[in-house]
Amino acid sequence: MSRSESTAPASTVGHVPAGLSMATVSAALVLAVAMGFGRFAFTAIYPLMVRDHVLSVTAGSLAASANYAGYLAGALLASRVPETRAAQLCRLALAGTVVAMLALAIPMPPSAIIAIRFVAGVLSAFSMVSASVWLFGVMGSSRGAPLLFAGVGAGITVSAELIARGNVAGLSSGGMWILLAVAAALPMVLAWPVLGRFLPSPVATPGSGHGEVSGLPQPWTLTMAYGLAGFGYIITATYLPLFVRDAFGSVDPVHVWAVFGLCAAPSCYLWHVVQKRVGTKRALAFNLMVQAFGVILPVLLPSRAGYLGSALLVGGTFMGTVTIVMSAAKHLAPRVRHNLVAVLTAAYGIGQIAGPIAASVLVRPGHAFAAPLAAATASLVAATVASVL
Image (tube, rainbow, N blue to C red; front, side, top):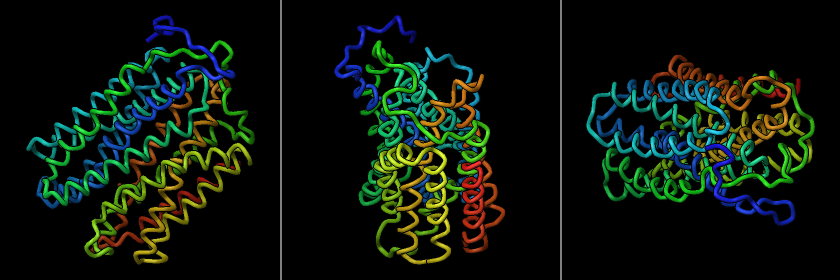
């Protein structure tokens, strides 16, 4: 949607565009649906699909890898979409994600499931890039960054708890996909009419709204660090319910995944504040080191406390990484000729593709994840070094 198509100009209250909060919430809902539901809910349902003989463990890993490949492809495609089409791409991500979840409820061969997960990955990248571009570029302000990225954590938490309720009700994995699709339709309906209807305030300028971000790295070092971070978090984010399934007795391991998402939402605000106070380089380095400790914690402490601590620390940092990096990208964008948000998203996608591949090579019989988690930790340490270059 072009800016000239807005229904009304935005008014201001103390230099804050009227309706900005509605726009920010709507952008967050896009990420909640396409990322929290469409992308990360698979982490919780994957073991249930194996239980129901819908997927084998191998096919499930291929489906996860296909999703990450779709994320990379979606980021590259989104980089070619004009800023004025960002709202339309958000709507495509919303509707397509709901349809993809409904499709997974239909009995089909594993190859079809893998294809659908690829499409879901494309849509999730569309949501990440287009929601960011719409809010930061079209709206002209990045003050909503913490709430925007908190949408992912909120989506993970809500979808995980819905899956847990579905388990109690005895739903099959297909029934759970239907439940998630119906639940995701509500935020889609709420966000749909708001997308693209607001303009930035005449006094708003790119990069305004949350103060200047100091300590900016070079675009290439930020991209390198972000790609390594994608590899570093994804093994925990993919397999956490799998390697904790026997540690909590009668407690559904999906609740541990819900904790992961529950920590992600407020962490966006925490790391935004840290970034403003100490600068991007220091905030990102601190974030990545805490995340590295969270990833290796199950190896150091293979117990309930270690697994829960990992969910708290990794869940409380991985979307903080996104918040810090994307806020910095807003300020670095004028220095580059390409779509920096899309390039960063693609780098993250490459890291995410490499993660499950490395895990499948390094994992030991009996699903011992010590080696994959050690490799992920090393990647996060390397990302920390890159972030301060």
